[in-house]
Length: 253
Image (cartoon, rainbow, N blue to C red):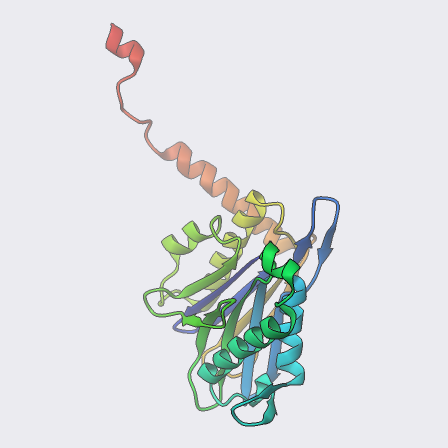
């Protein structure tokens, strides 16, 4: 299991991913799930992956090394995509190609382990900043002004804070802060999601990352953020009035 989130606001894009993979409580490993392909001022493609690790790595390898396109007869890589839409189509084709080659075994078909979902965010020179979620079938959806964030993996614990706090007008680094709170909520509620956390901040039309960073257990800001958020929640619930509903003891008097 994993948790990755992409938030696209007016000022730019934030992407955050955990790094934990596990096959049981006694077999926990760390693998990077947020990957960056970039040529400053030309293109930036950021991909966050969730699902079967072997499938995710095969898809990323195909995108990096190239795969045969039957329509053109040529080998294509992600960095050759001329737009974000074309890049999303290429990620979808790579997933379908891995499924064609690796997903036909009887064991994989029966177990349902061919599972991968990809967040693709970035910008190509001359195009606009965009954020997509690409499914295991290779089809995809795009973040919009009405829904400015997309999540993959264990998303339910981090969703409420995003629903309440994120809009298209949210300031870029406020979006990062809210995304980290969303990640902390998920980490606290699901042991299969954990530190370190990788993050990316991309300002609109800059076509180069403004921030790439890894948060580990000793990182002071994230530690303080967790403590302040927990304290704020406790203070908020204590400040709310007690429910006024009549109790059974009151009704019997």
